[in-house]
Image 1 (cartoon, rainbow over the protein chains, first blue to last red):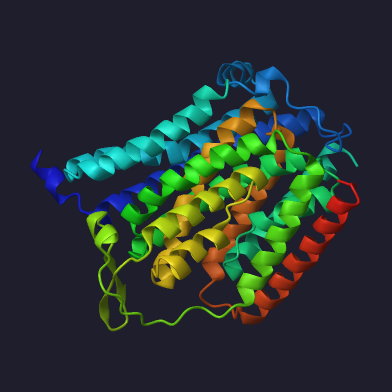
Image 2 (tube, rainbow over the protein chains, first blue to last red; image 1 turned 90 degrees about the horizontal axis):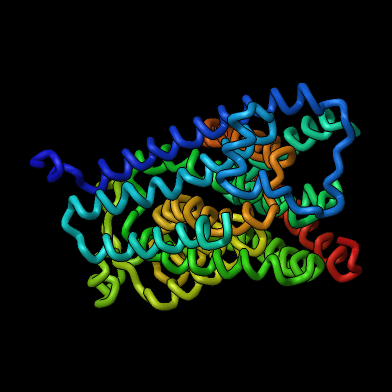
Length: 128
Length: 278
C-alpha cells in the first residue's frame, strides 16, 4: 500500500489522460470495424435522416446492442463502439473515486460518488 | 445520394469541423448540429445525438495531451461536474419534450453568443486574489507551471460558478454540444481561474458532462449508428490533426473566420427556427 502514497495529483491526471485516450482509440476501432461491415452491406442503398423515427429497440438498450454486435451486424458493432465511448468518462469517474480515496480525501470521494450516481442514473434510470 | 456517398460527405464535413474547432479552440461540436441540420437536412434530434457522441470523443482524446502540461485542476473539475451532470440530465429530458423549432432557436442564440465570446479579449493575465474561504475549504486553489516558474491562484465566487455550470450542463444536454464557451466563462470570469487552467479543466469536464446526457439520448433513440459513425470518426481525426499543428499555425485570422461562420450559422438556425422549417 505504500506505493499509493505516491499517487499525487499529477500522476493521477496522467493516468486518467491515458485511460481516456485508450478508451477513445478502442471505441474508434470498434466503430471503424462496424463501419466497414455496414458500408459493405448497405453502402449502395439510399439514406434518409430527414424524418425522425427514433432508433429501433435493438439499438437503444445495452442488451440489444450487445446482441446485434455479437451477431456481427455492422450497425450493432458501431453502436457497441459508441457505448464504449460513452463508458470512457464513466471509467474516469470511477478511477477518480479510487484516487481520491488513496489520498484520503473523503470530501472529494463524496463529490465524485455524486457525479457517478448521476451518470449511472442516466444510463440505468432512463430505461436502457 | 446513397449511404456510401452520404457517409463520406458527412465524414469530410465533420473532419473540417473538428480541425477548425481544435485550431481555434472554439470546439467543433457547436457547428456540427447546424451543418447536419441545415446542409444535410438531417432531423435535428439525430444531429444532436451524433454531435454529443463526437463531443465525448474529442474531449477524452484531447485530455491526455492537456493533463501532461499540468494545467487542469481535477478538484475544481470534479466539484463543478456535480452541477454540469445534473444540468445535462435536465437538458436531455427537456430536449425530448420541447419542439425542434424551439431547440433551433436556443441553438441559434447559443451560436451567436459563442461568436461574440470568441471576439472578446481575454481577461488580464495577472490576477492576485485573496484566498476565498469556501474555495479554500473545497481545496480548489492550485498552481501551474509558467515561464517564470510556478504560479499560484486563488479561486473566487464558487456559488456563481456552480450555478453557471448548471446552465452549461443544461445547454450541453439540450443541444448536444460541449458548451465549453459557457464553462470557460464560469471559471475564467466568475471564479477568476487563470485562462489556461479554465480551458483545460473545461475540456476535461466536457466528456463527463456529455456522458450524463448520452444515456438519455441513447435510450430515446437519438443516436443513429449510421450517422454517428462518420461524425465521430471525422471529428476525432480532425481535432487530432488540429491539436498537432496548433503550435505552428497562425490562428488569429482563423479564429476570426470561424467566429464569422459560427455567427452566420446562428442566424440561419434562428431563421429556420422562427419559420418552423426545421
